[in-house]
Every structure is written in C-alpha cells, then in structure tokens.
Length: 444
Image (tube, one colour):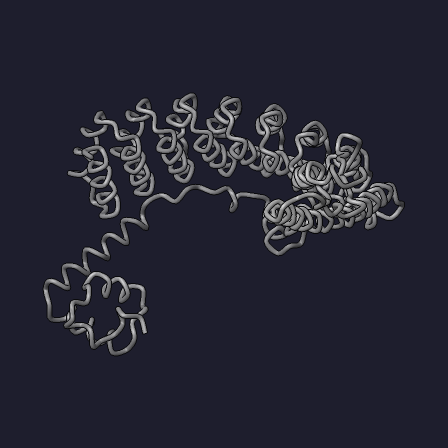
C-alpha cells in the first residue's frame, strides 16, 4: 500500500498536504478517507489547508491552456488520423532504413576491412549518390611467423593475432548483414517502382491505394509522381489521398504541387487537404499559397485550415495575411479565431496591432479571448494598453481573465495601474484570482 494511504501512520508525521491532495484526487483507501474526513470536520487547520488547495487547483485550471487548432481542423482529417483510417499514420515515424545510418556503417566497415577483402558496392535508397563501398573479407588474417623470436615476442604476436581474428570475425558478420540489407533495399525499390506504375491504373481504388502505399516509403523519388497525381488525376478521392500522402512525407519538393492544388483545384476537399499538407511540411515556401488561400478562398474550412497551417509554419512572413483575415469581420468566427491562434504561435510583435484591434472590436468573445492569449504569447509591452482596456471594459469574464493572464505573462510594470483598478472593481472570483496572479508575476 502507498505509504501515504496507511492509516496507522497518521500520527507518525504523515504530511497533511499530501493526504489532502490524495483526498482531492479520490485516491485514498476507506480507512484513510474516514480519517481525513474526520479531520476536515473538526480541525480548522485542515479546513484552511484544504480550502487553499482547492483554490490553487481552480486557479491552475483557470490558466489558459496552450491553444491547439485540432478542434478547428477539418473533422474528417482528425477522425481518420486518430482512428488510423489513413494508411501509413503509424508507419510514417518508422523509416525502413534511413540512408545516413547505413552509409556510416558502410564507411566504418570499409575502413576496417581494407586489409582483408574485396570491394562490394551497395546501392542504398535511390540513385548513384547513395552508392557506398563495403569491403567484404575473403579470408582470415594469416598466422604470423614466429621463426627466430624469443618467448616474449611470440606471446606478443599471439595476442595481436587473436585480436586480429576477433576483429575479422566481427567484420565478416557486419559485412554479411550489410549484404542482406542491400538485398532488402533492392526489394523496396522494386516495390516502389511497382506502386508508381499503379498510379496510372484504370481502377480508382487501385490508384488511391497505390498513393497511400507510396507514402510509407517516404522516398524523395515518389514526391514528383504523387504530385502529378494531385494535379492531374480525374478522381477527387485519389487527389485527396495524394495531398495527404505528400503531407505525411513532409518533403519540401511537394510544396509547388500542393500550392497549385490549394489555389486552383475546384474541389473543397482537395484544397483543404493541400492546406493541411503544407502545414505538416512546415516550410516557409508554402506561406504565399496559404496566405492567398486564407484571404481569397470562399470556403471557410479551407480558410481556417490555411490559417492553421500558417501557425504551424511559425514564420513572420504570414503575419500580414493573418492580420487581414483576423480583422475582417465578414469572415466566419472560426477563421478569425484560427488566425488569432496562428499569430500567437508565430509570436511576432508585428501582430500586436491586429490582435489588439480584434481584442477590442471583434463581436465574438472566443475570438477576443484567443487574441488576448496570443498577445500574452508574444509578450510585447506594446500590448499592455489594449489588454488593460479589455480587462476593465470587456463584458465577458473569459476575456477579462485571459487579458489578466496576458498582462502577467508580459510582466510590464505599466500594467499595474490597470490591474490594481480591476482587482477593486472585479466581482468574478476567477478573474480576481487571475488578476492577483498577474500582479504577483509583475512584482516578482
């Protein structure tokens, strides 16, 4: 039994705070639970400590969690990725054979086996740039001659020969393993070529499954064929699978075709998946297409996905487009909220003006709250005035609480006047606690 749950130890220095914590988490056995309840009913010290613990837990629960766009992502993407509906989700983290590792092994073997063997060329992954040479030993090192040597020199030579034999045996085993792996690489390459050929099959399901299978190889050679499918295949489901595959592979060579699909494909599902894939690749080269889609696409889920992707890339080059989307109240609230989240992820002071305007003027309180969170993430003193006004004037307690948190994150003494005024007039207990936390943060 956990030592904190042993009722026999209550009088032997048991920690009151730990018992109360376990009581709050409902992790006590019946005997200890009865003991704690009795103390809470009769002991003022325990009552005060328990109330303080409850307040601490509530205050922590009121702190803003780091925003995540998952709830705003295209639900089909989230559901299928969680359920493993898209082939290759688990395998994307397992590279069959990263070429850098075998190259290093081969280089080491080559240096080790030069005295004994024959050069064997292995072709790893794709193309001649991945050729490495391994020296496969043909024979064991010859036994040294001991003619004319005294006993000590003979023993020395025997020790050296024994070491050489052990080295030889280990090297031979390593080279044999390398040879077996090279056969596996050739089989993998053959399978990949077969999948690429199936991209042109007459059957839609065959083409779709071929695309998904190619994502598992994660080979740069598959990027161009899948990109062609994304742009040219007549079937929406195949093009959507192609965009997904390119996102799974996370290769920057896919950015051009994904950007073209995002901006030109007539199907909403394909455009959404292309935006998602660009977010997965996280390369600044995708910012231009994503920014244009965010501002100009007429589907609000495509726009929201584009904003999410820009937040994933975390590049200040996206601030302008995100600011435009955030301050355009004709956009759906989920677009504006995602734009505010993305600006918080980028953490650029260039976004303070747009976020401050959203905090004060947006009609949606969740957008206002997210804007306050983003300003806290950026931690720029330029945001203090807008956050102070929101703390004193916002009608929503959630927005006021988030504004107080953001001021505590910025830790600027310039916020103390607004915080002091707010703590006197605030009637919401949760907001008051956050204001006091912020004042303490600035004081510290």
